[in-house]
Length: 93
Image (tube, rainbow, N blue to C red; front, side, top):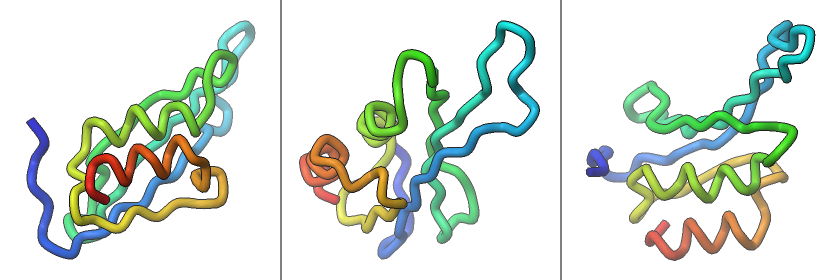
């Protein structure tokens, strides 16, 4: 079940690679998060397997698990893709 967010709350999506997390045969740890300023916290997060996926694919999956209806979603240029925009609009964002 998706938790309710305050009216007018906006969400910001961004991905970060953890510096120093790559070790020997282990790939870098890369996380994609959705942050809500109204509650000062991350409301959803997914690991991005950089050798198998990318932020665009994971963004659409991340959006399925968070309350998007009536919200403004922001992100950097990588999220200006049809797949991401379609996922936002289908949920009423």
